[in-house]
Image (cartoon, rainbow, N blue to C red; front, side, top):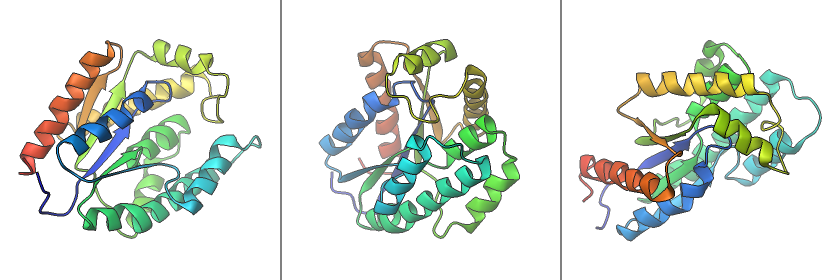
Length: 214
C-alpha cells in the first residue's frame, strides 16, 4: 500500500548476543513486501561521522571514560537524527534503526551506572529528537546471551565486559519495557527462528494497522 503520511520510526533493541542481528534483514524485507520504502541504519553509526565514532567506541583498545563514551554516543546520535532519520521520515520511509535511546539507558545507566539525569539532560539537547513508533526488544536468558558472546572470536570493547555488566543492562531493559509497554514489544529469541519471525510479523502488522497504513 502506498504510504500517504510521514514515515514510521522502528527501533530494535537487546543485549549483545541476543540474536537481534539475525532478524534485522527479515524485518526490512517484510516491511518492503508490504509496499513501503525502508531505510536501515544503526547506532552508533549510520553517518560518516557516526561510523568513525563507532570504530572509536567499539574497537579502540584504550580505556575510555564512561562520560566520554556517553558524549560520543550522543554525538553519533545527533548526526544520525539530523542527517538520516528525520530526512528519511520526511520522504515517507519507514526507518529501522539497530539501537536508539533505549540503548543509552540500558548500557550507560545500567551497564556503566551513570545517573539517569545525565541521559535525560542530553536527550533534551538533541536537535529534532523523536520517540520511536515501535521498539522491538529481543530477549533471552542472560546465561544463553553471555555464552553466545563468549563464543565470538572478534569481541568488541563492550562485548568484553563481565556478566554483572550485562545483568544490569538486562534489568534496565526490563524496566523500560514495563514502563513503555505500548511502544516496546518484547520477543524471545530462545525459540526457533520461525516462531520468532512469526511474532515479528504480528507486531509489525499491528503497528501498520494502528497507523492506518494498511
